[in-house]
Length: 96
Image (cartoon, rainbow, N blue to C red; front, side):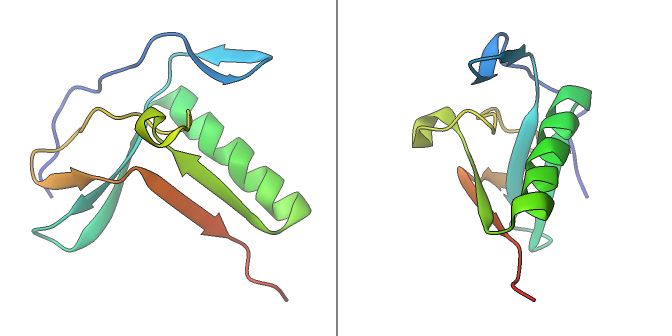
């Protein structure tokens, strides 16, 4: 898997009214390997874990979107030259 070594950040991106962070959470489709790649820094990982925690607690689904798709959870800067940026991710908890 080919990945770039540097991660870009989007300074001061708001997660909600109470939280500001400089995080990287980018989801890309590696067309060569037919795989999904998730790139993150610690803040982006913490955001993803919070979203998954809410999903585990409340069920249903969560949306992660780039600013181009009216979201603020995902960054828009591609991290790999062999991938296509994904602007919208839905993670759903399967009903028991």
